[in-house]
Image (tube, rainbow, N blue to C red; front, side, top):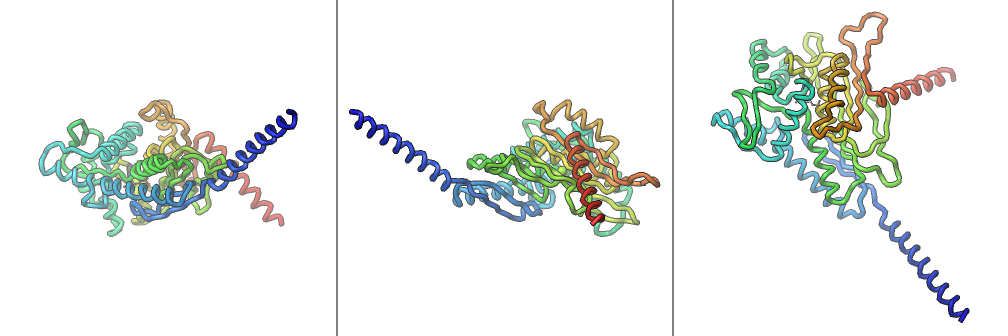
Length: 371
Ligand code: AMP
Ligand code: MG
């Protein structure tokens, strides 16, 4: 009897051990693999980084994301004359009536309107007629004629258009440029699609604007460099489940009579920004981050603190804005002698990371010189 018991105990233990071993083995075989896909989308290099359990799952998910990118681009692009957003404005103008819009366009316009209200006009997608005039300046290297600029300014603001259940209405000559928020919208969609394909550890990168999902397996987050005015990141941070967007005049500007005009316009004055700047915003979604990064550049170090405090207090639509971090690095327009010519404005967490990285760089430089 005792032998029999021993036999059964040993057998049960053996089976249990076998089960554990096979489980561990199959988990190892099934450990998610890192995938990377790159394409040029919306005119910028775009990357999908994620962890998936098979090549097939990864390829199918990536393909679904690329298709959605193209679909949204054909709705929101202000470069493509056939895009829905451009066609809608033309249709309103020729019929004089309200036009029905797709759900995607409705969402993009409502998001734009929300951020215009929250930033009191620093972010405004009706800025398009002014953007177009300044784009033309890039070729001719001269300011737009004052009369044309004045006429364009008349077509900007919250009261020149509205959207209700029957569709979109806009005054004559109103055009939308949702370029300041479109990347964010598309990035949020990309993560949603990956999640639908059971891929949650992901980072989607549209030329530096990011939507980040769960961390890579066994990691606390994705390491992200936050831009500075130079080539080196201002600092690094480890992030998960956030959107991060950067705006600035690094590559897109025109110089006329020694003045550097950015592609970002202050819709309230019709003038492009003239001080060199780079702004990064971290928010719960890429849409929020994208709109607020553009707005942060416009508001600048003087107006942004009050506006951003107010936005943080109010939340963004769903009453929440957390996590929320930002940094603006700006070269002062007229640096006075003896004063630093770079101003920074940052949320407490980004300030800490920025100062720590700067201290580390200074120490490294000093020790290099000592050697
Ligand atoms: P971003 O790179 O996200 O800052 O977006 C910049 C693009 O948004 C520009 O190329 C313009 O098409 C558009 N834009 C420029 N100024 C503004 C503004 N103040 N509000 C909204 N969109 C803007
Ligand atoms: Mg933006």
